[in-house]
Length: 449
Ligand code: PEP
Ligand code: MG
Image (cartoon, rainbow, N blue to C red):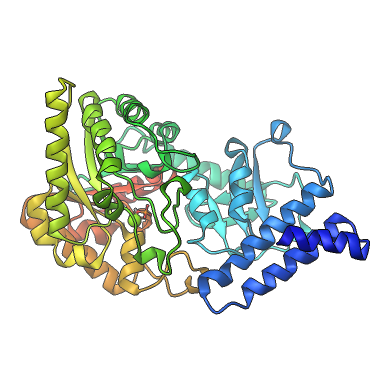
């Protein structure tokens, strides 16, 4: 219909296509902005995003020439997901955004791309031009524009200090050893894991193998990806999470449909238990890959003992099939993510059934505080330091330890060095953080009594 109204405007009002698209885009964006439903209202920005891109294509506006661009810091008012995914990630040193929300798709994409991002930085964009020097300190969230020699020296010193922690154990002065692992989204991220000397991979978000394509990845493709990661990590631990699709991560070919409350919807293990063919293909690939390294499998969004019992039954079926087909396999260590209040409350019972827990603080915060992590209007209420969240973490650790199981944190909060000491006092065994955060967290652990 937008096509029609543009067409009408061009014919009847004698305006050019750019103008017609722009006005039509504005009209649709306004229409969405005035809808009752929060989700639909937020789509107004997406409509604007598309119409801006159409106008820029129509007007032959210069597109960035990534080929000939030096690696740079991107400073912008805000970035849409479509702008972000189109960028060449090898050329981006950091993102600095004046607006935007820490839990927005763009921030999540930046994290997945392992690129430091500062959000909500009050800069006068007019005063900036291409080619000025700047430093982004992602660790402390500081942006230095035109840094003086002192600041550059300080940052380099800081980098050097952190580099000293490469090759060291993550152990407190009194000898408490923490397993410090890293999070990845695809095979190529392993390079960052090794570069930053993580001791293993605590979360491989396997759903990224399923996104941005037209059909499910088959068993062979998945087996190859998992085996590659395991082999690159040699005998170090690799925790691969089974498919956590749904909510904000959608793949059209799955035909999941629209939901009123996607965060509370058909997602992750719920899809796998309802569509066991998809789940079994992934499990076959995982059990086969287990022969090539130190694998653990982890299941997301668990809320009940029954789910774990069903999962184990399916794993046993898959193992039996592989056995009958004479295909080499191994049943690796199996754990669950603790990211719903239900799982926290049942942590003692669940710990009896599994080998380990990994606490997903991103979702645990969302579900404990009843705050949609995608809704940037709620950023100031999304508080992972909320005492309720911290007590949930403590309860989970106690539940796991009661049955002698290890427990880690793989949500963003695991990298928050203001809490490292508290987590260790609670008894946490493992922390899994973005590769770029590994050395900072290790230095914090090593400084601790
Ligand atoms: C989490 O919820 O904390 C987590 C690690 O998983 P994701 O961010 O992929 O939902
Ligand atoms: Mg999660």
